[in-house]
Length: 481
Image (tube, rainbow, N blue to C red; front, side):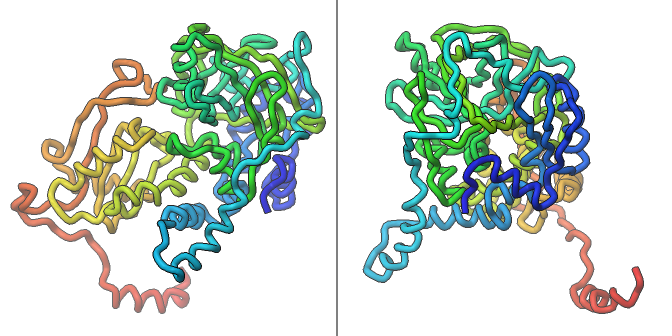
């Protein structure tokens, strides 16, 4: 059964020993972050801070910070199994004949209940604050690193609508709290929210925005997912949780938000208005550079009576976002393999903080195939930000970073097997000579033959023969090793 709300998820984590309550009073400025960083890097539990100083609302961090908790959050036995469920849906084609139609019925029945539905009463509107009562200091927003420009909301589910088409976008963009009723809106130019803001600006209109903080886990994850433009994030969340996301109409803007959210910030951004935002300690492990971003004006704060403030901490890996990123890798691999069927597996290693490294194993059959894969990946949505793509043969375990680099060291001729191209880069890439644009590298670490200009012999990698391995496997328990 889908989680009714964040509270239900946290109760399950506590029951399974995956959540630790912290009772001493701790400051949302740096202290909660320091504890979370230590626990996250040690592979520890979710943390429930009962007494953040300056706020009556408790804080929860590291809720997604392990593979077991990601499995619980997305209610799946493992992430590959959930990816397979996505693949099953993608396999649904127009049936031909009665038997095929009957086989499709169970899938259609499962899909029927996942579309978002509107409710008129919602826990997230237990308390409604408007006008002079709007005060963001009521929330225990964390300042996570000493060089941060201020407190940042780090798990906001940001809802906008295209002013031209009316299509909804749900994304996650950090928000620096400037004062009691304004924040930054860190929209990179490639993101859906930024596109809506651009369209509104062309029309000379302010853009309504709603920010849900702490809906159920599937909604929070869906806001981070690199979905195609024509797929609604709340529909995707409904698919993940196998139950419709309940939405409620906001009080001061014409947008809908998850009814089970902890807090909702309603407001707007004005066309052309910018304010200096940052620096901010980011998932790259460095401070992202300060820059000018749109300003979000808050017209209403609504919240549950029993609200909990969820936050995440980003910085040098591994941290909580590592597990969310690996979930994305596994869930969207089937979609990538639909377009590039020669791909065997793919890994976005934690050292690459999602967009710096991509390791791909392929079933290589012809010269130039590795180049085709590199260029195709750079053309796939947010994969365009990938700085380094390493392509290896099918038998290589790309989930083992050490094995991949071993293959690179042995199989690559730097002049022949390295490709340098220019293209879009993530806005947080401080090494790029220009913002959002620079050089990227593809590395072909596959076996080469005469068709690729390698006329010398190519030795086999060292492996033990199967008969000896089976013999030792049978004896292993007797060896005391």
